[in-house]
Length: 510
Image 1 (cartoon, rainbow, N blue to C red):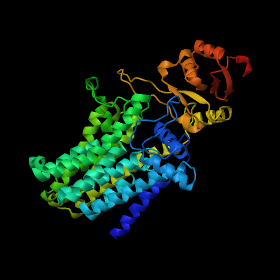
Image 2 (image 1 turned 180 degrees about the horizontal axis):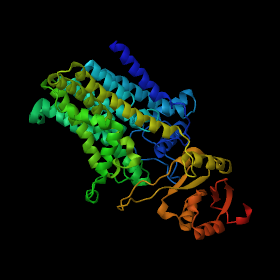
Image 3 (image 1 turned 90 degrees about the vertical axis):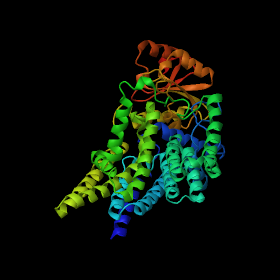
Image 4 (image 1 turned 90 degrees about the horizontal axis):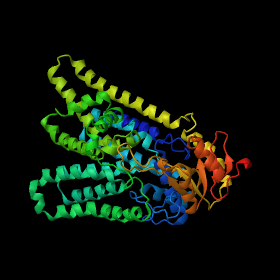
């Protein structure tokens, strides 16, 4: 019976994750810039060489395009699939899906090992319908790989916590290193690592050479990788949100601490649900038998929370919802442990037998129902072709015909986002989608630099065409200046324009 329910949960979780896997790289993207950048990097590996140490983007065309980023596990494996099976961006989703399904199976096995059977089923069901993990399962971004390595690191650290054998320590070190390579937020695992080592040895750990060797195994590959790719930022100004984004918390954010409230809201909506908060509290009151597991999971979840605070300038933003994928494993296991604790406490204090089971069961069902609604809402937003002049699909439909007017070696110019946030801190403004859709290289400029001089400067750097949105031409003086300086060579039915930056303005020639 138990094995049957476990298989049902596994099958349901896989089906939830796989439904979007055959979609092309169109406008149905929750994190469009991430998908577009990864699509470009995979395409460039496929066409220009499979050296994983030289990831290349398309939006800084007077440079080689080498970019500072996390280790490109997903785009490199996707490009490998292109070479073996033919070019199709669906392979990028398949690689992400494989990582997500693998992590789901490993999570189920671990939950069964550390929780009672019915608590493991509950934790498995929550993991299966996670509003974070289901949309990310086929997303063309690094989170599925990140969650997989974080899970492997956490399990290895738990094994070392239970059995301090050197092999468990070094497995934990290698998995943690891989997680940090997959994405820098995995640095939070260092807190869990330190907690486990101190719990096992106390401060005597400082006299054990194997601890230093494990630390070297953990940190050396990420230090080498991020040190290597940082010079792409220094030399070319190309970064995928590592150096060109302000992440760290500052005093200007503390009064009021809106970032903290936004983080808590994201956790409540997509990780715990309001009912899950009750189970999280219940997990703090487990019996002595489960105190060791509780402490381990609380430190793990707390370590993720420390990251959210340190990176508060971005972690609480709406676009950074996927940062919270790292919470799913420890939070879900804590809820499973809390369900067990609640049942045990109720058994002691309630004289009505059916209530002892009904109350924890109703809370558990409520958690699954609320999180399922959140997942459905997010999947609907992903699937629905939302109307509107600047929805991604609408933009794509308007600009794709421009590809026929742009030579394969011609560079384009695309306006990105703002270069500074409301506090005056620099943020990543690169707009990647047009480059991925049109399969052209070119340049970005920030909104603050929207002027004739910027376009002329881009032309001087080698750009040929400017892809202009209607809302970028609402200033009559700017539009007249552009029309008199550059020729419009194509215009969509909704007012998107393609300007030739090397041809004098011939407004009448449209």
